[in-house]
Length: 290
Ligand SMILES: NC(=O)c1ccc[n+]([C@@H]2O[C@H](COP(=O)([O-])OP(=O)(O)OC[C@H]3O[C@@H](n4cnc5c(N)ncnc54)[C@H](OP(=O)(O)O)[C@@H]3O)[C@@H](O)[C@H]2O)c1
Image (cartoon, rainbow, N blue to C red; front, side, top):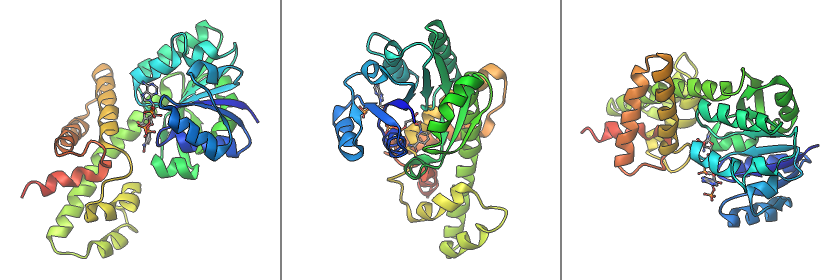
């Protein structure tokens, strides 16, 4: 069992840190809004620290799960940042979905201080975090990954090293590119079926056992039909992720034709008030076209 720090107790981080503590690791948490850290401590009987630096002091493994590149910089770097609190040879693991550039920047900063870094974005959503069954895509050195892997298995069902620093983030980009077009296809199909007057619950039950089956169909088709979007993976996070994908594609020359279009469709959802709606709210655009 390891002494761990967990920084960022949002929708994802809160249950992930809870799984670490439940598996017997000794966890100290930090959250910018301290009330959430207090709530976590009351629920899980761990400890809270007032800064990322103090959370990281004495920890063998330091985990972060915040919003974007800038948020990572504000908790990892500087006088009160996690790196400043970590002793030499300790491992910093970042679960934020962010750019491959920030992963490389963090690894370089860690190396300079004789510390280690693993980028480790996750897939599986809020339910995956709460049930401890996330897919974790990692980048970094093998030895650092091996040291962090057993702890990550407290909330990860598949924890895999895919290459050097940044490879986890690049894999997460592939994941998001797969999802973007698929969700639009699912939205168009559900909208079509509804307009055709079909019993969509029955349709989903039938085609969900055939070649059209997907995680999105299993978990989002019914709520799409019901127009329920106040849960799940927020559109504003998806747009942040797609921006990262499009910027990376500008560098590597990949064509993201559909992905770029879907990014615009999500922009429309946000204009309709859906910033915090689940990504399945793409169907809302189609219903506005009447
Ligand atoms: N939600 C999902 O289904 C899902 C699925 C896969 C991946 N992800 C990714 O996982 C990451 C976290 O997502 P989430 O849904 O847990 O987000 P969230 O609920 O909005 O939580 C964000 C966390 O980061 C902290 N934070 C943000 N900016 C900060 C800053 N500048 N300084 C210090 N702390 C800061 C927040 O602190 P406060 O409490 O003070 O605001 C909060 O603890 C994101 O990169 C997201 O894309 C999310």
